[in-house]
Image 1: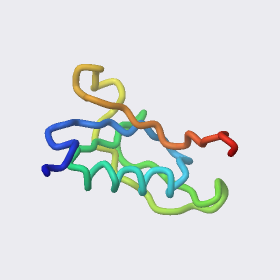
Image 2: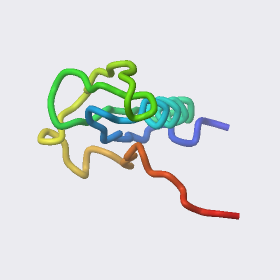
Image 3: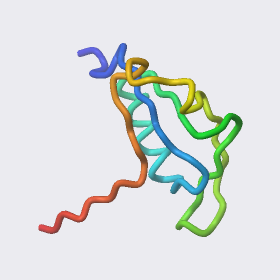
Length: 88
């Protein structure tokens, strides 16, 4: 079976302070599923990710700037940081 997201474009909207694990792991999963993924942010250059909200982590290159993209450019939008509050 082909990768389920082959041919799909996904924007990840993130800025300085994003939790690294919340950016890296979902991004990798999208890529492994075949999606073309762009990191979209407020400005060109790089964003600073964080570990535990207080420790600087890696920096990530911005692919596109918010002001240059539109809804028709992507099939999906991922916003890192959403946490489930579901209890079992």
